Structure formats: structure tokens, C-alpha cells
Image 1 (spheres, rainbow, N blue to C red):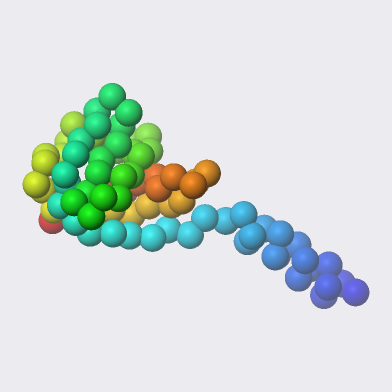
Image 2 (cartoon, rainbow, N blue to C red):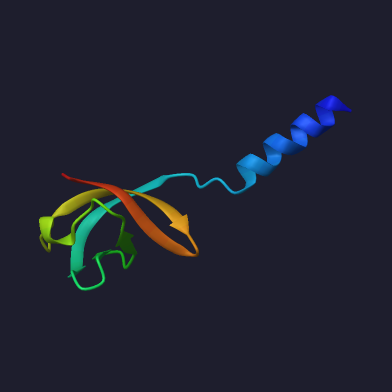
Length: 81
């Protein structure tokens, strides 16, 4: 019984966890008003706190690490390549 309760607790904790993913591409659009960037493949990433749209340039290749939150891709870290 204790194992069942422990397993259920672990499952409940991990079910809501977000798993980071990454994508690499060239910046097509920079939206400073909404703090977002769009890559040439059409994927749009909202920028989290600490990631500023003004630091990127159109045409620049970037690697975006992101989480999906409420159906939106939220960039948690971006590295220029």
C-alpha cells in the first residue's frame, strides 16, 4: 500500500512538469512589443524574464531552449550561433 501511495505521489508531481526542448534556426521576426521572436521555420517563441528581444538580429542563427506553457512555446534560454 505504501508503494502505491508513493508511486501515485511521484506520478502526480511529474505529470505537471514541463520538459525543455530546443530548436535551432534563423531569426525572421523580432517583436519587441510582445517580447517574442519568430524563426524562419515559422515557430514563434515568447521570451521569459531575463531574455531580451533587443539582443537578437534578424538573420542571426540562434539555438532556443524552451518549455511549452499554456500551449505557447516560452524561450527560457537563447544562444546566438
